[in-house]
Length: 499
Image (cartoon, rainbow, N blue to C red; front, side, top):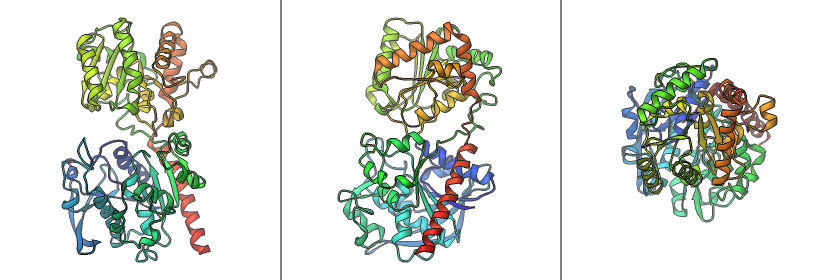
C-alpha cells in the first residue's frame, strides 16, 4: 500500500504532545509491515536539533496565498530513525522558523490560519511534484484538516487525486483550528464552498470541521472517544457534524513504542524486570526512587505516581483534595508527581511538597528519565482525567506493573478493566475505575486498591500480571489502521466508479 502521512508533529523532529508520538511511530510501524510510507511536515526550527541529517533537494514551488502575495518553499528530506520512512519537510522560514510550533504558552501565533493553510496547500503540491501517487492520504488533527477539502474542491487537483482516498484522525477534538471567515480566501477556493456543509462553521473557517466533512474516513484515538464526541457533552460544538458522519467514524486505540517503554530493557530504570520478576524489580526501583526523591525509604509504604500536564482536564481538581487529605492526616502513602502547567496547581503542589517532603515529592517540568522511573517504581498510578481521547500514561503503567486508577472516559475506559468482583474472579481486571468524577470517589478507589494490595495480595498480583501481559503495541494499532485504510480505499473506488 502507498500511504502519505500528513502531520504537524512527529518525533524526533517536532512534538508538543501525543500527536508527535503517533506521527513518529505509526508510519515506522506501517513501513516495517511492508508498506510504502512518506511523511510530510513543516520545517520547524526544532527539526534541526533532532540530531538527524536533513538534506536539501532541488524541488521548490510557490503558492499564491492571496492577491499580490505569492509564497515559495523548498523541500528538505530526511528519514524517521531506524526505518525506511522518508520525511519531507516544507521549508518556509517566514512561517515555520520560530521558537515554537503554534505559539507561546499564553497565546497562539496570530497568523496560524495563514501558516497552516500554506502547509495544507503546499503539502498537496509536494505530493504531486514528488509523484508519490498515494492510495490514501492520512491527515492528523486540525493542522492538516483542509487537505481533504482541497482534494475534493480544487479543480486543479481533482484529476491528479481522483483515485486517492483521504482519512483524518482526531487526536483531541478540543483543538479545531477556528478562524475568522476572511481567512477562507487563503485556501484559494471559490467562496461557493464556504457554507455549513463544508468549510464554514458559524461564520468562521474551521479546519477540523472541513476535514471531517470532506474526508472519506474519520478516525479517533479510542473507540469510547469515538462515541463520546458525538454527544453534546464531549462534542466541543461539533457533535452534530460527527453524528452526520457516524457511518464512517471509528476509534482505533493508540499504541506504545515498546522499544522505549519496556521494563525488561529500559535503560532509564535501576533494575530491569518482566512479568515473572516484577516483585523484585519494582521493589528495587522503588527503593532507588525513594532515595532520589528524598522520600522515606520504606518498601511497605505504597507509592502513588502521577505524570503529565497540571491541567483541569487531567482531573487535578480531584487529585489535590485527596492529596491534602493523605498528607494532612499522615496516611501511610507516598506520592511522586512529575509535570507542569497551570500556575495555580504548581503553586499548591509546591507548598505541599515543602511541607511534607518525606511523603510527597514534586518535580515541576519534564524529565523523560524520571517519568520512566516513576512508572517502574509506583504501586499505583492516578489518571482521573475528565476527558481523555486515548491516553498513554495508563498504557505505560500497565506495561510497568503500576496499577492505574482512572476516570472511565475515552481511552481510559477502553484500556483499563475495572477490578470488580467478577473481573477479579475471571482474571481480566487491570485497574480501578472511579464511580464518579469526584474527590471522594477517587479516595474510595484508592482505598479499594490499597485494601486489595495488603489484604488480598494474590488478587493484587493477578491484576499486575494481567496488565503487564496485554498487547498495547503499535503493531496492533497499525494492523487496525490497515484494515480501515483498505475499507476507505475500496469505498473511494466505488464512489469514483459511480460518478
